[in-house]
Image 1 (cartoon, rainbow, N blue to C red):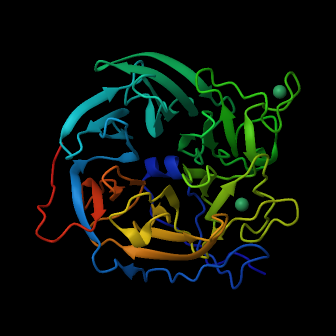
Image 2 (cartoon, rainbow, N blue to C red):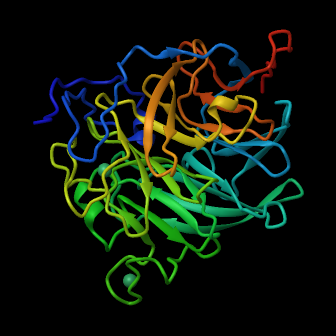
Length: 398
Ligand SMILES: [Ca+2]
Ligand SMILES: [Ca+2]
């Protein structure tokens, strides 16, 4: 049962495939979810319109490929620019503030994925980035100092060493409430690695943000033993979005399946999320494995995820939002009272706007999304608010 059928090839920009790892993307027939896997009632291609009173507008136009959006403690928007291998900084009104180049790395060296600011930035003036390095293809994560408008002192914290001439790189990483850095790493299309405790692929890693070393209380840390001491959770295929629930301090993650395995997971210490043991990719891997809290019968290619913490859209407060690289829709998932499960989901059609890589809750109480540029449109960052219709639109170029 639940076999994936009807092969379907999604047109992919080659570079995007690197980011998202979507080779062998199939439409899936899944009549019913296996035990513990929540079936989703979304009808592909039939999203809901935005609720009345929610206004979406272009906040920043004419950007290329913003991947990760972060509102800094200075009230400015920081975003990683994939093609430019740079971090761009905008003022609260969307106007240009700075372009931060990564010391020692250029756009010829690879492509930017996730980024983070040190939790005490700018007092601890460290910016963290993950990128795919070309020739040979590797995942690299580094931090560098950014102070008084100058970037310096790059420190490499992670570099994969196995051949990675393949997609499934993962992307995002976040600081946890414990101050550790949590990194989602894809399986590099070698699915067996996701169950191998001696390598970082297909895992969530938990590391010291200054050294990149695994923390001694990590669940599989064995010192000089064979395990990769950085591993926090395993059995993932291509985790892209990561975020913490500010209400519970728990880590949530989006994982990209090869078919009907696009998932939302709540990551627990030492948890095994099943890949590739789920066999047909669409079934619950069984006892001993953590089933997803939500999965999609048809791939949506989940990317960035975030909890909405604002109040300008009060009905959405506390809900989990995520983007779809595949259809650009904004997905809203409502949690149960304990905030350990998902009880409902809806997809919104943002019209000419969209949500392809990231969504983030803004300090002004609004919700922000982004899209990348294509043949038919520029990349942009959008604002969802309840601002009245007479409020002037923000449209700013580079
Ligand atoms: Ca070890
Ligand atoms: Ca799974």
